[in-house]
Length: 444
Image 1 (tube, rainbow, N blue to C red):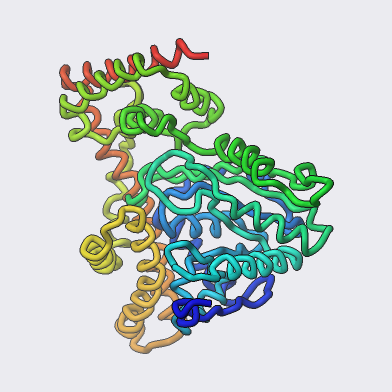
Image 2: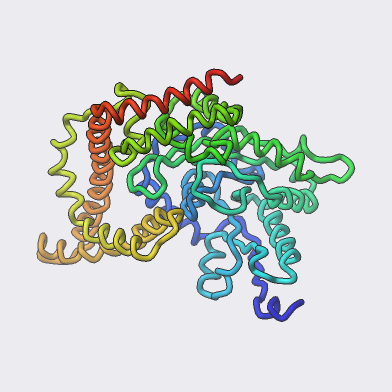
């Protein structure tokens, strides 16, 4: 073992099915995720495996630490265990907290440890032990995050985990892999839409080589790629990503109810030849130069003028109530917003930072301001008075957040309406949409 390896000790995670720390934290996590995002829909809930089936949950990885928080919020029938970069486990306090949240270290090339592979083998053995006693593993097979609506090549880590489980216990042949597609309308944005799509589980039993009693990377990763592609927005080819993204955004994938039709259109991008893409690129540049992308969000524009969001005449009638219930939390919201803008540069961690900061800060803040409010209201700081005030802030901020999401839609509708009313912008936008429409009609 090299000197660098000696300086970085291996802290072996315990064998555990779950932990009380996770049980407490997941309630705050679920509240933070649903408070920050607008959960537009969850498709395929019937595909979630039962708690007794050894399961590895896999998903696309676009949005930093928000992605595992989203998956934790989705899977309610058992605790989810994760592999996390090893360097954050060296501090004792962090390590104790991470172990209580079912986190385990995974070692990467950048860690520059001569025995990194041996350490990872041990970690996968622990994963297998946890799967055997009923834990549920979570993995992002792409290996790292990237803020793009596309599926990258899958790493073999999931294969190593499956084979470790098979070598440990023959009964693990019943293991299944559950693919999940996470679709963000606008990753960093507060109260923007989020949709989950859960695919049919992949059964490991039928993929095992009878001679080796293992699963080869090819035999697993190919069907896994197909299963993941079926439930997520996968814009290909990547070289045309920026050109094709506006069309996909205009389709409002988080809101569509006919996913198969939407997915079919997206899949046809892969069959476009270079000549056709040049025409689409030209139409895209014309639309961009018209200024329409600066005037309105593409999701608000939609595919045609009739696609504008509905006007809610009653929205402003509720504005006073939203103000009265949400103004108490407004100072903390603005403080978190300012701190994230100042400190977080990677867009993949903006929503995570805001949600986690709010998850910790708001309960403490509401409790602190409930003490003087209870005293002013009743003349005494009683448990009932404090809890009444706390619940008012808790539920009131929820209501204000719900109203704010609708407000964003209303503002977006007005901006999009102005864009459609501008002949130059609307003509350029429709030319772009038509260019893509005509191109995909000629494929397949």
